[in-house]
Length: 136
Image (cartoon, rainbow, N blue to C red; front, side):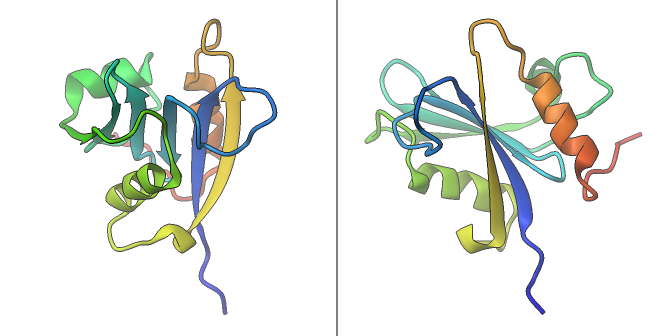
């Protein structure tokens, strides 16, 4: 029997004609248990923020809540100007220890980074997940 894959939501700002994270300067990665990483360009190179805490669906702003209440591990990718599969693999395998890329099933969603708040996309993804537990 094949092992069930861990579901991952990759949120990417709108970029036509591509579902591949290569070439992007920012992305948010959400694991079905509420673990999250943010990847972005800091003006010099790519940075990954890996949050130790999981998303609290009861908070009003997921990222603000994590920034204020979670340890954040920062990883510099000083050789890279764009996100690539190595950076994505590093983030997901850090968030879910003891895994490799073959353990994951990726879902890519684009959003309008000017006018759209991604919290509703994260909320919908986690509500559908059987592996997310509300922390109370």
